[in-house]
Image (cartoon, rainbow, N blue to C red; front, side, top):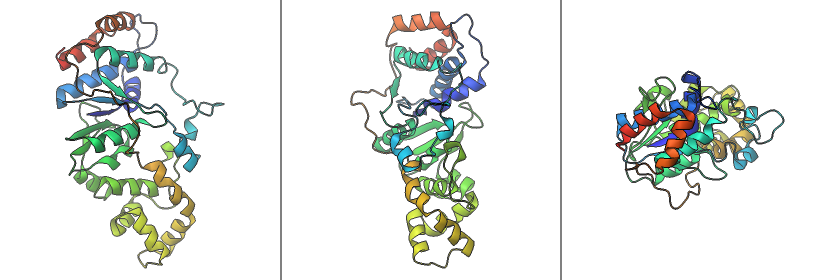
Length: 300
């Protein structure tokens, strides 16, 4: 099980009532994220679990390809800092410490996003993989043959996620594979990530074109060769977006080769890794109840 950690703790921050119970900072993201992991372990019984981390939320290689990538999320006056709710920012280091104290694996890669860590771990897995996220970007990793699916939390949360496999991709978007979804996303764009897409080409048109040609590269080759499968309007719009289409795949597609630490252990802990640190965290941040639920789920 691979967790898109930021997606989940942002959801926890906005979905769990804000209170501190005497802690020095608000703890809604800490409590909610901890409860989410307990629920996921109880409901799905994974053999391994990795909290995948954004060591870099806006990697240089993506910005170099498309400078608008996530630019609207920058803190005003900063070239690198992501704008984040004031009450969430101090909770993130506590989540890091809590994962370490319990003994749950957390993995990031310098210069890469959590999506890239997830992509790298998913393609390297030897068994079925559940990716837990509220972000559609990771639908591109869905692969029935490899046993990779997404537990999509945008509507039902971790208690009732939508299970995204290839059948669900076809039902929702009219594409048959995760790779086709990535090509659809490239054409469609994503305003939340600062990706403009092809102006005038919406999701349905993108799905039709990808379904007809199989992938973006074949579509573009057919366009260049004057294939009759495009309307004049489609031909004009795609030609106008040529520079964007040159650059966008490197931004949209998650990495499958992010460098990862050599010594991480994704297996679930069989004992609390640091009881002293965990007790201090519980006492300081008043998170005894969610930690207790997590320990019960883990059997430690």
